[in-house]
Image 1 (cartoon, helix red, strand yellow):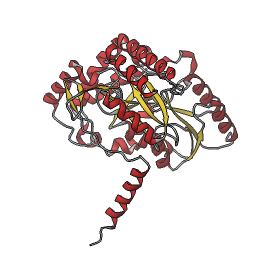
Image 2 (cartoon, helix red, strand yellow):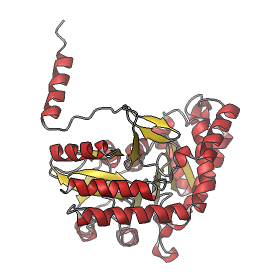
Image 3 (cartoon, one colour):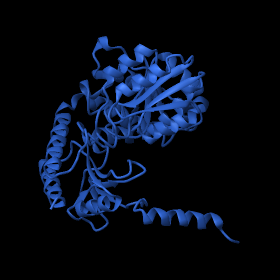
Image 4 (cartoon, rainbow, N blue to C red):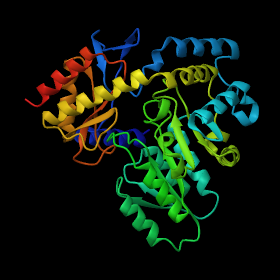
Length: 391
C-alpha cells in the first residue's frame, strides 16, 4: 500500500532541512547534575531554564523522593474524579501566598495553562484579546483556541496598545490584555505598572505570564508582578511555571478565589488532565522553602548576565533590549546560527541556535539562558568562546 502520509511527512522534513530549520533531539547525559555530551566531555550549560539550579538541590530531590514514597508514583486521575489530594491543596495555598493572591490552581504545564486558560476566560462571552506580538507560542495557541478576535500590538509598544484599545472603546464585550513579564526569546521586560494603568483605563482584564521572572526577580524571587507598588492596581490573572526556577515541572494560575473556582469548572486543561504526581509536588514544596532565601544566587545570576551582555556587545553582537538572565546574540541566518552553536559546542558550551518560526525571519540567534550555578570560571570560558565567534 502506498503510504502517502509518510511521503508527505518526509517531504516536509526535507524542506526543513533545506532551510536549516529541522529540529533534532540531542542525547545528553548528566554526571552529578552536570551535562555530558555523547563524547564524554562535560558541557557548560548556558541554555537551560533551571535558573537557580534547584533541579539538583538536595532538598528538592529528597522531598520529591519522600513524597513519592509516601503518596505514590503518580496521581490516579484528574483531580475532579479521584485525584485531588490534601498535599495539592496545601501547595496551592502556598503558591497563592507566594504570589500575593487569594488563590492558585496547579495545571500540568505552562503550555497547557496558557493554551487552555485563555479559551476558558473567553468562554465568559464576547471577548476581545490584545496580545503582545512576541508572546510565547502557548499564548498564541490559547488565543486561537479561544476563537475570539485577537488584536496584536507591537512588542512592548504600549502607545500602540492604547491606540487599539481606544479604537475599540465602543466594543460591548470583555477586553483581555495578555503579555509576558519577561520575554523568553529577547530577555526583555514588560512595563507592568503602565500595563496595569492602561487596563484600568479601559476596563480590561490583565493576564501576565511570569514563567521567566518567578524565582529570579522581584522581592524574594516572587516575580515582577510582586514588585508592583501597592498603589498601582493589580494584575488579574498570573500564570507561572514550576519547571524553570522552581526546578521541577508543571504550572499554576494565581488570582482571585472567583477566578480559580471558575477555572475548576471551565478550564479543559485542568478538568480533563491527570493531576501532577506527588514527587513533583514535593519538589515544588521544597523550592518554596528555598527561593525566598536565595538573594545571593539572584545577585550572582544578574551579574553573570551583565558580564555576558557586555562581552557580546563588545564583540559586535546585538543583544536587543535584554535586561534579564536571558541574553540573545543575534546572528542572522539559520545556517550562521547553527555554525555559531557548533563552534561553542566544540569549546564545551551548550548553546542552542534559535531559528524561525520561533523567532522572526532574519533574527536567528544564540539564546543564552544563564543559571546561578555557573562559576566565574564557566563564565570566563563562555566569554572567551564568544570572542572567537567574532574573529
